Image (cartoon, rainbow, N blue to C red; front, side, top):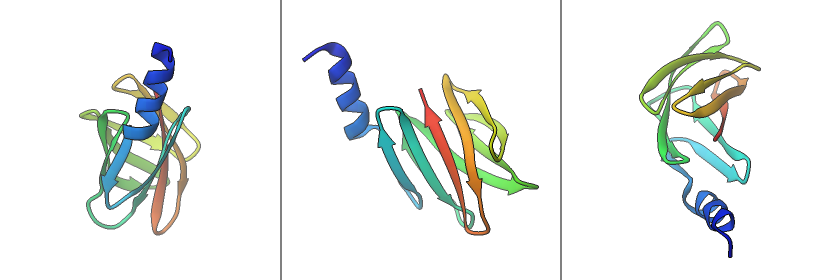
Amino acid sequence: MTVASLLIAFVVLAGCGGQGSQTDCGLDGCTVTFPRSGEAAVSVLGVEARLVGVQDGTAQLEVAGQQISVPVGGETQAGGFTVAVEQVTDTEVVVRVRA
């Protein structure tokens, strides 16, 4: 097994998890569904991500200790990761995190 194969297996098996949110991780990153109400944080790809709030269709997130604002359909860099907001509804915020 190559080093790349081991790294991919590690990311898939141990890369995502959290309380108050749903995560779905694959080879190309993790999709996190945060509830809009309550405090939710997730460990994703070795860093903590949490939803701070949503205002006017823009999600305020904290990723790897860095505060960012990302509009629906937009993406930005934080802590060496690409963070995109895929969807914001009345009940949840769907975020994609890629290394």
